[in-house]
Length: 623
Image 1 (cartoon, rainbow, N blue to C red):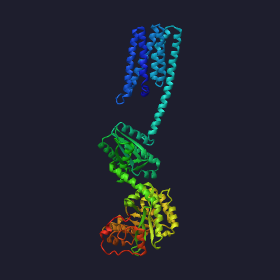
Image 2: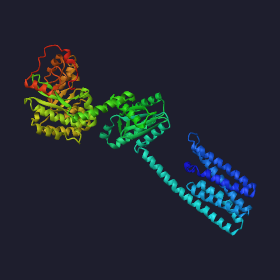
Image 3: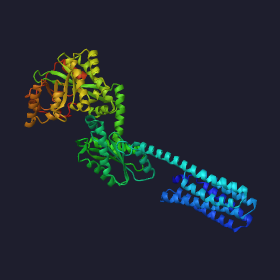
């Protein structure tokens, strides 16, 4: 509203100069000192109003809008009173038609200008019109000149109409202003938490950066929030988001502003110092130590926080830095905060380059399968081989699956890789003797509803002609975290095809007896981490004995992974597993090498010597 008063910076000075000049001209022509005094007063008012305009334009001056508004009122009203006085005095005390015509024309023109310029501010314009018109109209009437009396009547009618119309215009203006303001609030506010939304947050950050203000960004992400939505529903999830917003807001200070930018992602912009903003990040993490009560449920919630200094940076770059710090915090175990360091950008750039190379590798067939044999301790022969993906990069050499498989899972490439692995493994296995089977690892991402895993397996069986009972698909228990019902239904459909299902990496991580009851499995693969202490730990042996007994009761074959020493082999064979796999016997090898071993009917090597350094190189048999 103040901007409307100062919205035409040239109009006021020009108008004041004209009015001052007209009154001064009357003084020169008539020699009347009253005109000279009125001219001086009008010039002084003009200088005052010009000064107010300068103050308004100097944004760095700490002048409140209330002061600026009052300065505008004072200038407008004194101008109106002086102009009305000039017109009234001229009509009342001068008979020179030239002077009277000039005064009448100037005064009426001023009143008309007020009606047009300030019609949206009735508090200003109504008083202006009244101060200018009443003394002038009174003098016109008192002159008893018929033409002046008519002009006075028209002028008073104009005052009434101006006041009436300005009130209506003002009402419409304010209504539209409030609607616009409300729309702006809606456009920049999150409806669930009432915090800023993404647009409002970006605007706030840009405003701070443009002003040169010290600016830090904090990205706050709720750990495992998807589980709440999936198990308790989205209504409870929305209520939880509101509670989280309250927790976050409770630790903020005057220079901090929070936003929910989407999903379970929150952002904070702060003008604190480096040490203070680090303390803020830590306090946000600590604020979720106590459980959150929502919808009659008590939930243990934790958050991860990424912190970045945005001062002197662009908004996009600062947000990227903040996200990199957040991703690092999550990868290191969640429920913690980390500050951005340049090394994170380097790692991110390497990841992007590797992702680009992986896409190219898929097109150019740079990936291939290697196989690690699984031996029967009874028949001492190979019973099956596990297919493992390998990538020989043209510039970087062999890249570990630990590096590129998670990347493929993140960007969706795993579906292409998985389909290729199934088809190629089954095709390679068709050249092996009938008793020898093949197993292929399946990622949780291959169970998505937009990926027909059952159809892919069925097509691969049909195209290769391999007997389904020779094929085993390996899944881990973490697969259930995505969509347990879908995973179980998919595995049941695959088993109907005659393909076997193995539960991989059992014995560590998410191992649960309930999963054994729920999952349709034919084989249990014991993780190498569980086997590492089997030769020296009586507890490990007791646990393996219990698992072996459980596998027997469930009529599930047991395969032990990661056997790397003769001592481990001796300890494991006491429990009569179905198969043994590990570096003690063979490392993963290309198809040509595994074909030679299988063709020569190579039996299990004699394990009658102590372990050597050769067996201990490269710890993971699954890598």
